[in-house]
Length: 112
Image (tube, rainbow, N blue to C red):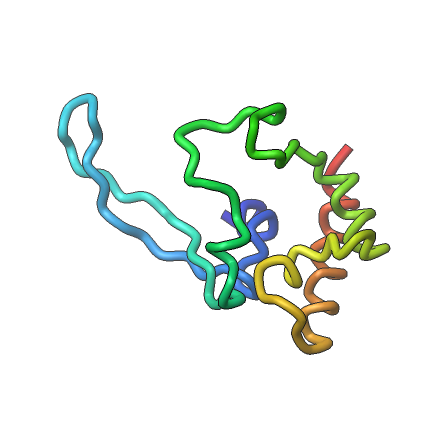
């Protein structure tokens, strides 16, 4: 869980909890971990893409996959507002910049 927690910026950006889900294959109930945003900017839903059933990097949504290493460099340089905390939380306090740098440094160390 520790690696996934780092990838999902837990506990700074997301919280996590276990929920029961019912499997389609045999209707059995299993426990699953989910990550939930703690807070977000008021227009996040309006500025995000439509709900997707599946994802393709070249899809019409205009959100191509960005490799973790590249995204980390962009976050450190804050290229074009690439700070994930700013995208989700909006313009916020210095703590968000600190958390973004912490995540970006982790991603740089653990990717490639």
